[in-house]
Image (cartoon, rainbow, N blue to C red):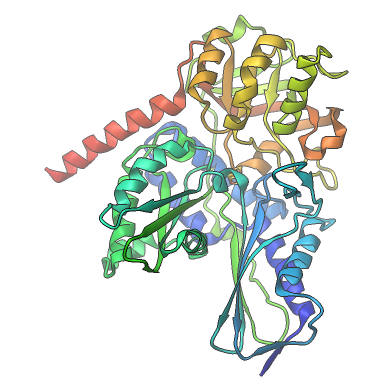
Length: 509
Ligand code: SF4
């Protein structure tokens, strides 16, 4: 009988979470490189260049790939022949302990994003616990662990459906994906779970994302099973939608589609779909009683040599002088380099501002939004010489319900975030002649290097959700909605969907 030491298990969880916070799986890096090389849409190519550069920088600097360091999701498969040297902690508690240590690591602190009482107070637990743990008893005398740190932006886009037995799964996926917007930070993967019951399908979808990217190998050898045929069908049709990296329109939306299935009731066809984002983070290890797992660090030479230069006609903007009139001629799709001061704010800060405005209190002391831009971000804490930790954009759609109030009442002229805005918000942006700029989701460490100064100006008690003032230099963004209401997330995919159809019909001739 194999005896697993509790300490080895906890140490392995801690090490794996630190490891995946800064090392992308190499299969994902290679898949994005392949997509980058073949991409014809400049906006999507630029986004993938930033994702690849960010990936290498994180690997080198041992700092998080993304400011959202995720919710820990762990699959533990325990051999029937395993026993433990101590029985005072459950497997869930051991995973929590490893998580706690990993997220409070002094050299590379990770952002604590978990809130307790989710339907009520939503109070941060401060150490990113509890983890979500799925335990299976399996034959054998080892413990197998698959662990991921799943970003909220991609998790929020998960979909579940109970199809009729005769319904077409690929059709449902292709119809559903465009409704998910770009908040899941493509290019990524789709995990699809089929069968069992509703909750089983969801767990299968998540587990399928723990497998490495191998769709091109599958294409080469040809599909043999129903799942393999479906993977290829969905892969082709989803990429044919033209959504592209960051939803800006392009050839690659997903780098792989994973499917796991189990038998189900004759009357049912449960299907769950969970996307994985540009911060694809997972590790896989076995414990056999001989000590903690050792994860092999990849070599930096494994990362592609990608450079990204802004074009000659890039607009440079001084945020300290920009006015409402200046932004009128910014055009959708244009790259802009921002320098100067901006304020930050995300969900909790917006909610509090709204309450203060409703109560007639005005903005908090120290916050003047006249002719200002607000950046939707919740950064990782800084370490050492850093001004701020990784600080990429969060999903702007969540701020939609506050945007009209912000533009109407505070003097704000622009916002920076990731992914699309809803139709009412686009109308509000056009009505107020404001702009919405997009930074690349998943390029958080790269973005943080453009931030030269940072200080908290209000709501300090909100932690990473406080309002900061950032002073930035040449921070690259794309105009996603301009002051006329032209919207890159609508025009980009439409153009590229048509182009892909054209390319496919030429190939078929
Ligand atoms: S890449 Fe996007 S979805 Fe993924 S963790 Fe980062 S911000 Fe969230």
